[in-house]
Image (cartoon, rainbow over all chains, first blue to last red):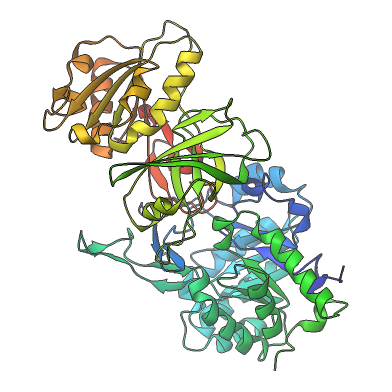
Length: 302
Length: 257
């Protein structure tokens, strides 16, 4: 077996495979299918300072090789998370990472500060890229100043590994990545969903309750891969690749493009066991081509 | 209840006209896991280029002697249509059992009416079979557009009393299930309903008006089926909850209907 360990700043992963926020619940939902301790980490559902009901149903539309969603960050708030969910997940033997979202830099910071106190949460992923909420979310992720303001506010109160999840719905994702790096991010993850739309021709109306949603699944992989390649060549902090990864070959493409780790998202819906299969597939590839460590292939694509 | 991802082997694929298909599948290697009436499975759809996600399909029956599970499927789009390509021997990848089923009878004398409309009759058979095993006699009220859409009546008759309505009057009483005399005159302790939403809402409102507890099975569009994606939510008295995890069966007291 090859050495699969990678580091995201101070965060040590046993392998580069994480599960993406909003696609793996709190990990518990997948316990019947996957030995969670075999994963590099689990990024749990987006958490906000206050509870959020999310957007009305319908929130999902199937597309060719993908799906649109407009869940809108439904969650019970950070206090509920700390009091009721954290006790259930703190003993899961992998890196439990919390995805954090908010309406203002102060919101993000207060939420992050609460999570900073939790011993078994070694990192957060700041979601400045949710396309499905009116305030906050993507609003911060589409300008360099907005992105930097959130990261700065959080960095002041958050001492552990700070990952920032970037939106692809921008002119230059590299500029945003550089801005959050300068503001103190330890790593960036990309991409969040691409903003899209579906129309029901029978009803002659838009399918999703708020009209638009975030596109995920294999259909976005080439876009994500290009952005990861560009960002990885521009920043000096680690990059986590996410977007349509459905098998080990997809994951390897992101590693070769320069990602230090990858997240599996929508593919969890089709095969709840896919995450551990990708871990095995990466190992088999490394063995086959004689790489002793996964670190040897990160960013080596010509 | 523990959930499994299984590669089942199709033992029979029996079409009922062009719109319905009875798929029966077995687990070749091990006994099928414990499953409850009202729960569902996520069927993997691999042969369609235009679809992507699994399809949630209710459990029509589970035969532990034959180690078989049955799915009664209606062709409602490209995803379900691709199941028509299944043949005996085909692999059917499923995640099951998912969600919470109907409340089981509390006594052998409990009078339970199972109301089904269209393909919504599917999960009621499993419930009826289970009730019969427990010594409770089920009464079915099944509605369809016309006689040719009234399917597998013999299977329902083999475990309980069956009353029928058709919209055109070609079989049983003419009209909707809510207009059937058994619903108006019969005395029931509980009603379990599965069918199109307007029909479930009508039965639920009738049940409410006469003070009879009622459960309905919802079929909101789902992605994961595991309570992870939060796409299939229903707005309940407890806020937005996942139909796949907290349902698909809900007491009508929980719903904002």
